[in-house]
Image 1 (cartoon, helix red, strand yellow):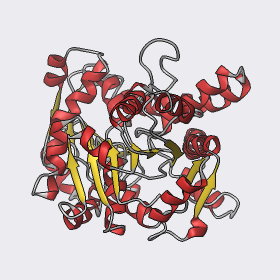
Image 2 (cartoon, one colour):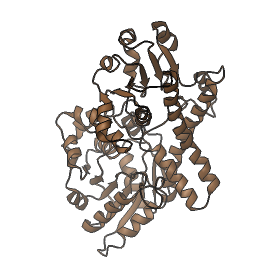
Image 3 (cartoon, one colour):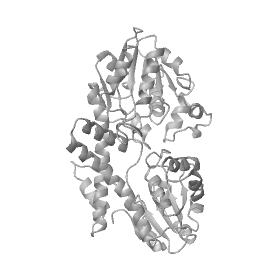
Image 4 (cartoon, one colour):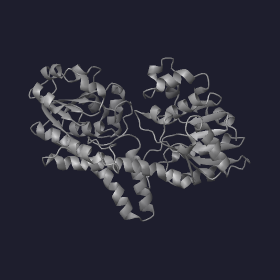
Length: 459
């Protein structure tokens, strides 16, 4: 099928950047991103591209180049579905918070709503592409819904999982390690492969069956998260011995069989995918009574939660076993640098633990505003929104956030944190002045020469 018009349902972290790059590389294809969230679409259409709803290095420039030419953002979902030949489903698939599979299984209600919407309005043949991270055999459910509409429209279902790292998403899209397309119809697979083929070498476009494609996405994220939990487990051992986790990571990373990536000890992983995908993997394994498999992967999550709790416990014990009434400055709220995404950020859970101990939290993040910080804490339902608002304050200046603080906790590895005038920060803090470096980004000797009581992960 010759593709001239693409519709993407979902204007989030995956749909927005992916479609922007597809539009840039395929100027003859009209790409329309639709979403029911009017505020989000308005932000994507903002003349000031610095105010896009998603921050990714390089994204604003591509949107500015393509928007209004062959890239469009709209709330007219039915219209976009009708006119397109290819539809990407790129909606949220959060972990279920209710019913069977609560806390583990993916909630597929938004995916199903998309499928039913497509089935209802489509009047011509369509290729439907799963872009959301989905459990194995979701394509079968989508196929069942689409093929039982009775309107004689032919649908082909493809799985095309994303392998983006937030903060480098545009770079990942422009130069992907691989593009994975799973499906039954060779014609449908090639239609999508031709779109990617305008900039991705054909040898980097993998064609599989749909089940392998779906499972590959979950497995990739599980393996990456496993590496982080593994080095974090070693970081705790290092803290009780004379070893330094950075030296250990460098030594093992030089082994070509292991490699250096994802071996930075830290406060733990966050983001929308790692935890959700592992829990999904655990749920699938348990549903087939593969309990040893499920237990193995669940341990990755357990260790990650332990690392976050260990960090906050260490902070409390170091501050003489009480943080009640003390100002703790948190540098960073996003789950990693170069993104404004805060989903499952370690900062949320560390802050929540410290608030339970009656600490006063001051937050500075270059890309996350106070509204988002408050929303993240309120989502936990640990205390009232009024209490969170009273105990947590956001600042727009790193020197103000640390003024009169008893301790600084570095939660995100933003590059700018390394360039601060740390002497100035020290002078304005309560003494003794503590730094808890959850990302190992500062120089220990330098911090201690200024006068800080410095604590890092794994040493």
